[in-house]
Amino acid sequence: VQVLSIFVHPEWVPRSLWWKKVGEQVNRLHTALGSSDRWRLALSPEDVDENYQNGIRSLILEIEGLHPIEDDPDLLEKLWNFGVRIYTLTWNNSNRFAHSAKEYQDRGLTDDGREIVREIDSLGGIVDLSHSSDRTFFDVIDMGISPMLSHSCVREIKNSTRNATRLMIEALGEVGGVMGVNFFPGFLSSKSYGDVTSEDVVAHIERIVEWGGPEVPALGSDFDGVKALPADIPDVASFWKIAQSLEEKGFDEDTIAGILGENFMDYWEAVIG
Image 1 (spheres, rainbow, N blue to C red):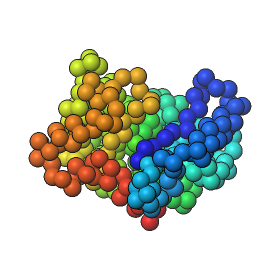
Image 2: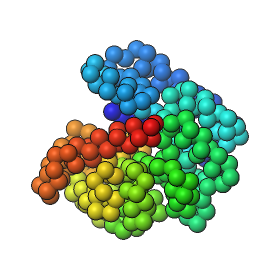
Image 3: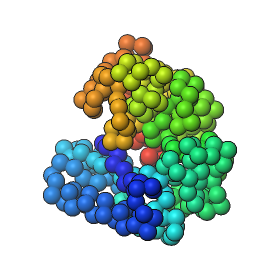
């Protein structure tokens, strides 16, 4: 299973073209999938199971930042019909709906943001709060929504506004959320990028388990979005190193399986209800 992001850079692409660029990316994806016998878009956990049984890999579609629908929030339904199932409220830029971690930590959801979160939840979509401000995170929690942090790390280990605090991780555990650990060395550690390894990823997983519980951590590598990776994890073929380290630290087989993917699948099923 792989999550694939729709992303339109808010500074490099003129605002008038944001929605057009979304459509172009979706069209290219569906064209590619139409000629592939190895990959298929998954719209539900059941699709993932069916694809797996048939030897097919699943893609889950996400949009990173809702700024392309700022001018017309009704386009949310079109995103759903395109196959988008994960909705990251912000990228580094704040938007009509919510404030970002990079800009305004003390500002959260707007009134329009609360409405769009309710609509995402009513559709059965996943509300993703990586990149969002702390206030946005807790505003969503206060709405009774179980969110995801798709690609974030632990702030108490590496102090970055893109990372989650202990209170946020504890809140995820209380509401049944999930958190994918980002592999970007700059979010994992204060060490030089070349000195960061899978052990740093495991250190964040351990802290998430301690504070949120074993059902919270997942892997949110951000392979297609970062400029550097841990020295010994260049790709998914290296994930066994994370599993091996967790086993050596005493994690049982079920917990490791959860971290490697089952936690996210259980979470997705719960969101759909």
